[in-house]
Length: 490
Image 1 (tube, rainbow, N blue to C red):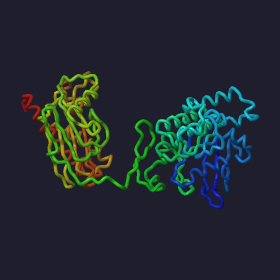
Image 2 (cartoon, rainbow, N blue to C red):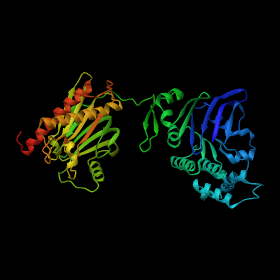
Image 3 (cartoon, one colour):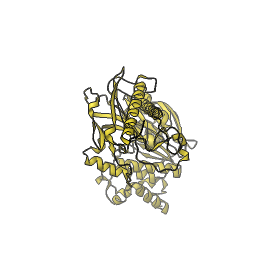
Image 4 (cartoon, one colour):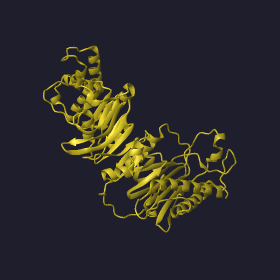
């Protein structure tokens, strides 16, 4: 365990670090964040003894760090500084071997199997085996960085201090290095303190973060409590947006530039839709912010082409995504710029309408067949393979929506669709109860992110009222068109 109490210090008479206190436990990785000049590297140098402290103490395993001899301290703490001066030319292996100096009784006079194991393991962990006999001076900055990390690991000290360890590294080697250090903390109980410039990397790999501002602790805690929009914006003076990592419960940031691409005001209109025999398409001048349950490019993103493709009711393909991707490409749609859905309904029966509210306009597009209608409340009682979806709904908003409004819009649209099925007395053929949808319905909500800001889309808000009315209206009309085409009596 390493304990820092009321540390102050810096260069000469100027205190850069001021009254910093924190503790790092065995097996824990602490990341130090902060803008340039905030005292990150200075704090690490004071902890490692490179710079003298003015006040406070550093305690290692209950003993004041200042009472350790240089060699004893090196057995406890390995340091990777930000810059490396090369007084001599060494091979990569010789450089890594220097990490074993604290364990020697003489100048490598007692080289042991344990030393050999530590050096070989460190070289392998940093994937620098092929450079082992090369002079370190001939390596790139990124390769040199990996060599010095290997040197620190070969030292096998229980505490590791790192100053921007991912400097000069490409993303693959950043991942490899931090994965290795993280695994060392887990497997060997290594205590790690590391300075980071990259907030996202720090959040991913650290148990806790210490955010510094003007030499003092602005925040300390788990990443979720430190990587917060107001805290980062206050300390760094940069606009950011936080969002969760797609695989881990860790926050990530996205920069919001103040200089934006010039986009002339635009709105989606009904004439932007085209209806062909095999698909309904919408093409927009600029990308729309989108959330959908589509087949191609599902989830969230920015897209400018939207396709609802007709397939036969007996469509049965092993790899639906690959087949649909090939179809879109054949039709001339740019794959990274297109959202693609599939429907068993004849697309010429699609209903597309524009609706006007106090804030502006929305557009609704619906294809609705009900041959495989289901009552979701009775789904546990049925044993039926899913078929191609028949009710696909698009909601296009000429306005600015926050994330919560997108989700509310999806809820409102789904409620309106279900009400339309009730109005048209559509029943689940297996249960005889009123249907709530079909087995594989799809929904898309997209926004121009221009015009009036619309914070909510629930059913009593201006936007929600218009979505509810529009989706209900178009769904009823689409169901009636479907019934007429099938020769059903109404």
